[in-house]
Amino acid sequence: MKRVYVNEKWCLGCHLCEYNCAFANSGCDDMVKALKGKDIYPRIKVEGDDKITYAVSCRHCTDPICVRSCISGALSKSEDGMVSIDKNKCIGCLTCVLVCPYGAISQDETGAVQKCELCLRNSSGEPACVKGCPNRAIVYEER
Image (cartoon, rainbow, N blue to C red; front, side):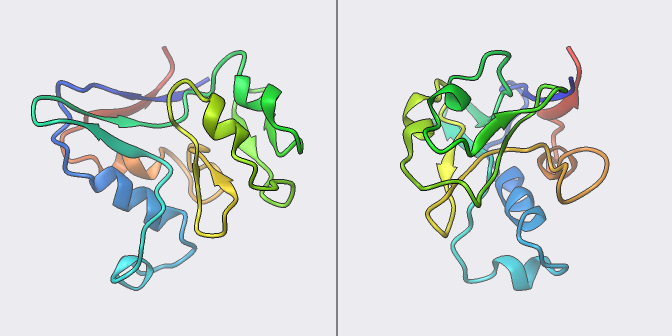
């Protein structure tokens, strides 16, 4: 399965991946209307300090503890290996946020959880964070 990988040596810490992710998942056709003056809720986030930065996103683990810990059954793993969220089932207990060893799950503006779903629901081709990374620090590939 293809996944998002980050090369921290190339990450500039510019946060463009976050903006591209938030826009891709906004449902809007215009980035300015989707993001200007609003809080953004990206499914990828840049972490680090002044020496090293890197983007954190869901790793679609082979044995995802988030899926096993989800008390409402909102998280599931498909046959192709992608971990996804059914927002209609999510009760906002945040157990998955607590157990994710990578810190890749967060709350959205409604209180439900969100995580990277590889932009499979909102676009074709590669994820928006990969397309929008100016330094190619984020890649979408099978390893």
